[in-house]
Amino acid sequence: MIVGLTQIRGVGYMFANTILNVLKINPNQRIGYLTPEQVNSIESIVKNPSASNFPSWFLNRRKDVETGEDKHLLTSDIAFTVRNDIEREKTSGSWRGYRHMFGLKVRGQRTRCTGRKGGAVGVAKGGKVMPTREGAAGAEGAPAAGAEGAPAAGAEGAPAAGAEGAAKTKESSGKKETPAADKKK
Image (tube, rainbow, N blue to C red; front, side, top):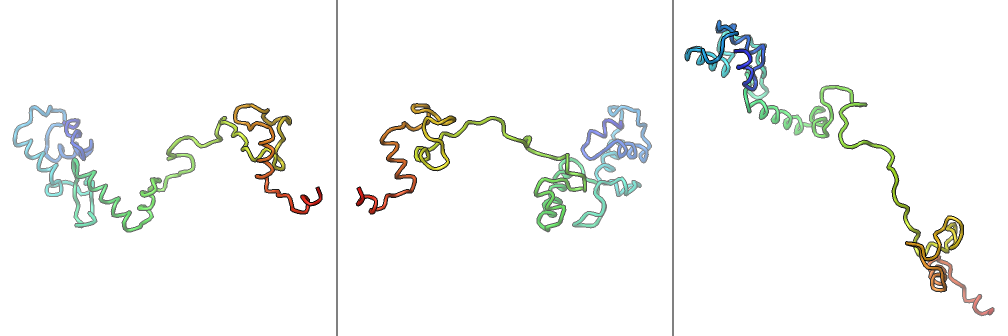
């Protein structure tokens, strides 16, 4: 009997045991052997436990926010009510509402080492080295073509060293020749 009643969402082991004690039904009896009167009495207590001689501290929704009365929620009413409570907290801007909005722990638990979401955070491993830009070969601080550590001419992603490359680097380096230098020649 007890295990069978706990299959109803909202009825736990102690709640089922108390129902059977109030109705004076044998908890070791099988559900199939119940009389129709016993089934009706169990249904009436499960639907409205506060109407019968049932302790109010067993109910799962005491002092409801909207009505102020003691209720016992069953099946899909539980999820619906919890969702409404969370939305009410979010719209009121309470601390609990903010914690719910950001997906953090609400009831004061520690968050330093638990409750983490997402992948591991750490140093990225490996990766490709970006090739140097064509105009940066002749710039200050950049290694010249053929220098140690610089990509050789014709290497993949490296600019070809030649007259065209030198002219482009001169133009792109930002250094312009003054007209006075041209007159001296």
